[in-house]
Length: 453
Image 1 (cartoon, helix red, strand yellow):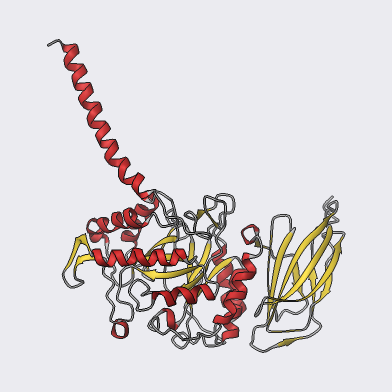
Image 2 (image 1 turned 90 degrees about the vertical axis):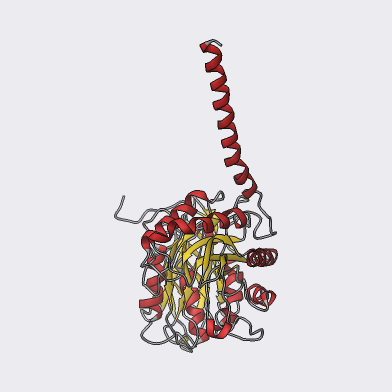
């Protein structure tokens, strides 16, 4: 046999082995990329939008307005249909769920265990197949009803660096079985635990690099005043928690508004995925909770309604949480406007009274925008209040709404002739809060501010 023949045969053998190896890599990935489609909201996976990096966008170009409700034990609770019904009725688009954990163990007596064995004698090399099947059933139930999942990998366990090898099978199985569901919004590594940062970096990097759809990876800390690890590449969103109440020490301006603005400042989707709940966190004033949600959203930070019936009361089918009636109007309003184009703006609207809290968001040309104004205390009434608007040259409609109901109150038309001018607008009388939507209806030649020619 000639040397040439030997070389050719070796080359053929090498190419065959290479081909088989490539097939073994491609086949599992191609299987994972066969997604389900849940119309109309979850037709494909949402990723961070490269054009509007504070937003999530899917393949069809639709942007997701995040309004979250906690539902820790959704994968095991007695009435999953009720959880979805509540979320949908209140305008929520996602729920936050634990894959692993013993949430409120003494009351609910659930052990969410995705592996083989038991929590006492775990087998991390196998899975709890009946539980996984039920998880998939409930993910589909949510998707079919237009509800997404904030998927939390670890709720009770707090793995460390030494556990990384044993947990990789779990991570791989999650992507293989669940990545295909477009209503899974994000992979949240841990709930309110940051002491195992090396482990979370490993897990975060794994999902960041291996999710074929590149949905965001996140994690969360306890109550803070700014986002967790916004500098980490694998952290796809700026996440903050405010498990605080409607009490004087947590002022709407100096706490809630400041935290929302901080979280929005990181060029990532800003998301408070756990706010204060009633009783436990003394967040018992429904009107105050409405203001917290509107303040966050008008500062560009998505919000969560965290409640007893999303925690230990998840099996209560009739419970009404403080402020839940205000969620649907908020959700409906933001989904009626191009919210993804709006950025915080601090010079358009200036109130004559410093006691009011004012947040404004506009698109880059100030062609459309919103201003949310509220009082710092519940039941405060505002009469004949003026505010000053600074807008580019043009004619604008100003519509005033009641945030509690989304009902339109009145409408005005103003004409701006110079950015230096601030036009005084008399607000309709209101109690607690009012919402303005302004939109340019006629464009005129832009004038620069005198002194900068």
